[in-house]
Length: 93
Image 1 (tube, rainbow, N blue to C red):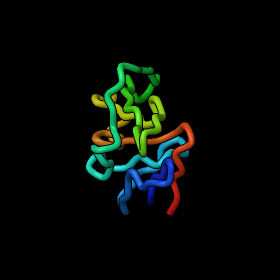
Image 2 (image 1 turned 90 degrees about the vertical axis):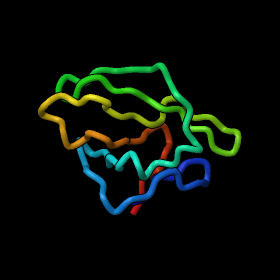
Image 3 (image 1 turned 45 degrees about the vertical axis):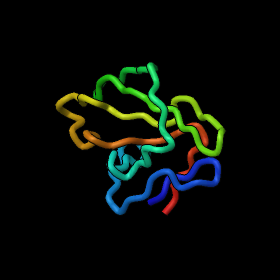
C-alpha cells in the first residue's frame, strides 16, 4: 500500500492493518521529512486519544492529515505504532 499526497509517496508498506475502513501503516513506513508536529487531539471511545501530524510536501501544508494513537486503549492494540491518513491523502495498492 502507498499513501500519496501532493504527488509524493509519503508512506509505503506491505504491512497495513485496516480498522474502520482506514489503512494503518507502520510508523516506520512514514517519511519523517514531510512531517510537522501538531497540537491537535481527538478522542475515540474505543481507541483512545489520537494525536496528529501536519504534512508539508513541496511547500504545501495539509494540517492534521496524519493521525495516530500514542497509547491506544486495550481493545485497540492493533493500531499501536501505526499511522493513518485523511484530508486528501490517497491510499492505494
